[in-house]
Each structure stands twice: as structure tokens, then as C-alpha cells.
Image (cartoon, rainbow, N blue to C red; front, side, top):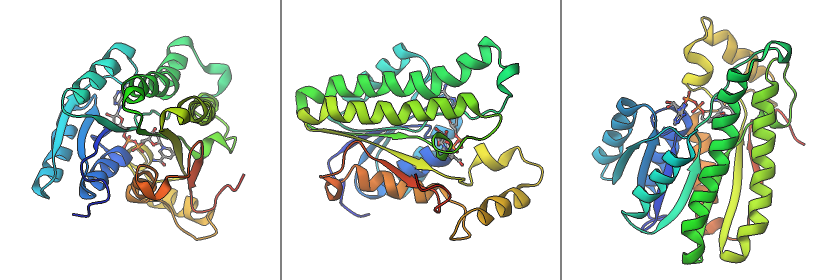
Length: 251
Ligand SMILES: NC(=O)c1ccc[n+]([C@@H]2O[C@H](COP(=O)([O-])OP(=O)(O)OC[C@H]3O[C@@H](n4cnc5c(N)ncnc54)[C@H](O)[C@@H]3O)[C@@H](O)[C@H]2O)c1
């Protein structure tokens, strides 16, 4: 256990899997008490067990992070435990579809979670952090916000909007002592990217070849960036998009 975040309460969404799970584990390892949120109850329980077995503190809350009222319920749940210091929005869906084939339900599925969920979560967190005069918000964006990829128009739009949401809120909330940043991962090995791919190794090799480092990301690479942004080491950093992408894009 390191103690960089001791005494802080952190909400992490998408905590049942991938980047959210790694982030929750990393923040707990650095001393934070964590509230784990996701729609997948079994995955949440697994993450909580990993944290508790290592001596940390974790509280599970099942929530659909596309639903503003459930997000507000999550914020109330967390604020009922302790002062809400940290909120990391990692819940997101990626699905490809040519723009000409998108129907309204597909549109809503991507935008309601990736963009709406981030907006409502940031505002729910901020409303509770403003009276405290302190807080840390991190949105998980994506490399796709910078790099057009055919078939991913809605996903890319949602993440580009998350970047602008991050910058705008950094201006609105900075005077209240709240820092708002985003981490934009490149290809990261998680269930989102490899679980459904029949040839995962070839997919990984293709993406590694695009990086000047010859690497793909791990969920812990992203988690480490989040941990930096919610610590006092980054006290002069707000409104930034920290790209953890192996150098694939350098806008
Ligand atoms: N993996 C990558 O290469 C990559 C790259 C860039 C950005 N990202 C972003 O990172 C974030 C996490 O992705 P990941 O790779 O860890 O994905 P993942 O598939 O491993 O996990 C997604 C999690 O989100 C949960 N979830 C889905 N819908 C939800 C909802 N409505 N409410 C609450 N939880 C919900 C799922 O249950 C799952 O636990 C996403 O925002 C994604 O866009 C991932």
C-alpha cells in the first residue's frame, strides 16, 4: 500500500472490468477508499474482493451510468460514506457502424453513455464537491477523439465531446478548487478490445506496430495516469487531455 491518496474517497465507474477495474485497484493501492460502480454486479464483486484481499476498502454500487437519476443515486451513495473527493468516469461503449447505417437506438446507446453519462456524472460530482472547495474529476476519453476511424463516427464524436466537456468544466470548476482532466487511451488490452476478436494476437500486433514504442497499452498504464491526475503531484494540471497511447497520435 502506498499512501498518496490516503483519506480520499473515489468513485470509479466501469469498475467491473478493464480500465475501470485497474483504476479502482490502483487508487485503492494508493490509499483511497473506493466506490465501485457498473451495471455488472458479478464483476463489481470480483473487483471488490481483489481490493479487500489486498487490505483496501471497496463499496459496490450497481448503476446504469447512462441514466442521470442512477448517476445521482451513485453520488448520494458515495457521499453517504464520506466526503466525495475523486470521480473517475470510465464507463463507455465502443461499437462500429457505418454512419449511413446508424439508427436512433444505436445513436442513443453510444451517446447516452459515453457523452450523457460523462456529463451527468461530472455535474453530479461537482455539485457535491463545490461546497467542499476541493475535488478531482477524470474522464476516460479515447485516441479516437483525435484520429478519425471509419465506422466509429459516434464513438469518436462522443469522446471528442468528452474532451471539450473536460476543458469547459476545468474553467467552470477551477475557481471552486476542483481539477478536471481526461485520460485518452490508445489501444489497450481489455475485454472491450480483445474479448470478442477471434484473432486477438494479430489485432494486438497490428496495433503495436502503429506505436513508435512498438507497444499496446495495459489497463494499468491508464490507471497510473488517473492516479497521477487525482494526486497532489498534479496540483497545477487542469483541463488537460493526457494521452496514454504509445505515441500513436500526437496532436
Ligand atoms: N480498451 C481500449 O483500447 C480503450 C481505448 C480508448 C478508450 N477506452 C475507454 O475506456 C473506457 C473503459 O473501457 P474498457 O476497455 O475498460 O472496457 P470494458 O469493456 O473492459 O469495460 C466496460 C465496462 O463498462 C460497463 N458498462 C457498460 N455499460 C454500462 C452502463 N450503462 N453503466 C455502467 N457500466 C456500464 C461494463 O459492464 C464493463 O464492466 C471506455 O470509456 C472506453 O471508451 C478504451
